[in-house]
Length: 113
Ligand SMILES: [Zn+2]
Image (cartoon, rainbow, N blue to C red; front, side, top):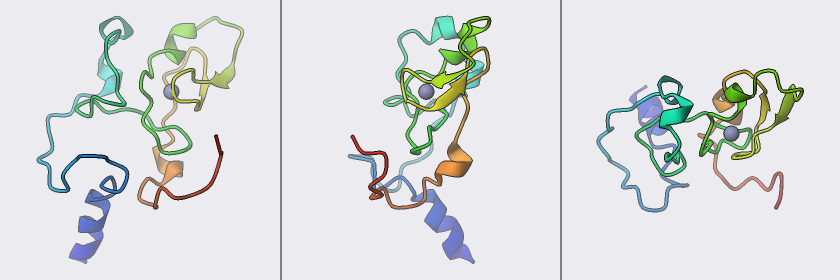
């Protein structure tokens, strides 16, 4: 019963290089609360105090503000230039967190280099 919760909170410790397992959660900002103009210098792959949508591989998008700025562009679906996720022009970046299942081990040989 308690095991289940403990398990999900440690989902990142395999993929993180130097994050200790027991970090106090820092104040989290939502990337959707930040305007693209204020995000110019942000990199969500490094700044873990801000939430980020995940691509199909369960990776954080470094800069998810691009798709929403492309309203009117004749693109429709396209691959995010930052994380490669399939997104929709004119819509906020799609979050694949549910499908990506980041709790699974990162050793799946899928979508090779
Ligand atoms: Zn992206």
